[in-house]
Image (cartoon, rainbow, N blue to C red; front, side):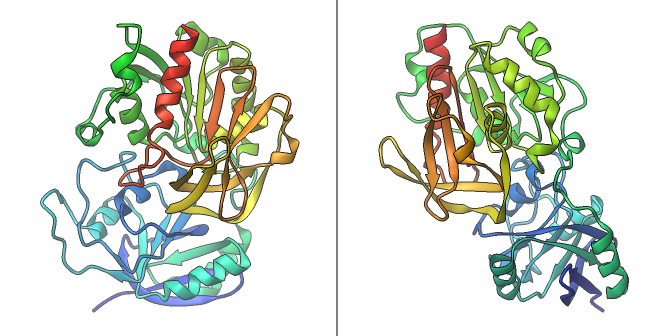
Length: 382
């Protein structure tokens, strides 16, 4: 007999479906993701910490879970909401089913849900707090927990996903899927030495590390609270600021470190949360989007060239463009969906960042060349 799962939203909406994964209760912020593929990468992305993911694609679980496509060692989401869970797993790389993987990591899921209805609700009314029970907790109890939960605004979620100590990245099983285009900076660089990159782990995706490594980089990954002095002591050629979960306003220690590192004139590249931290270090605030950007089909325009890229995105907060000093900062990318800020570059410092994910796997790959920009900047500074 199939077990019942209950999903409750903060506006009082109650939805029942079929339970899968672990028998637990969870409270979270519910967001929808429009990607058609890559559910394992989505589920293991640390940027989703504290959130439940509503998949707009109708069928999930058909290729199971493999040992190579993780963005982190475990699922990072609080819960999954889907239309249909595949009853069959069929893929030559599959190691276990999605439901079994969730059970091992204490993550609940609900299937048999009208995901189109829920997506419209979030799109029209904005992101909501929610609770999911796969063990029979009554809806009224779940609703009370939702209203009592403080949410993610202003919280430091990074401390839940950052590494505990500094380590050196070593290519893993997934690294063999990374390919570089012909005539990349690695083929023409002036130096035979490895690039020394220090990467801040605010919830870093492993595919970012794979891409940096593919350029011949020797990568040292440091915890989120590492000071600028400690980073500079490692004598990096470049500094990378990673993606990560939650509200950048909850990370004053990271903003302080980024501000000091900008003054060092060492090339800095930020993605997603790293981009937002650069924005705050440059004096701008960040604000929350109505329902965020989550998916693999977001068009952005590169303003200097007019070129349009299809990008992968996963964020709920945005740098407030009007608070940046345009004498110091060039806006490089804008969203063609809502005109929000998607990229910036300093005019007098080797610092740039993008809100989207150029390393995205399984795709799209339109923005892969942005990694070239980072290493070209490093060569110019050498």
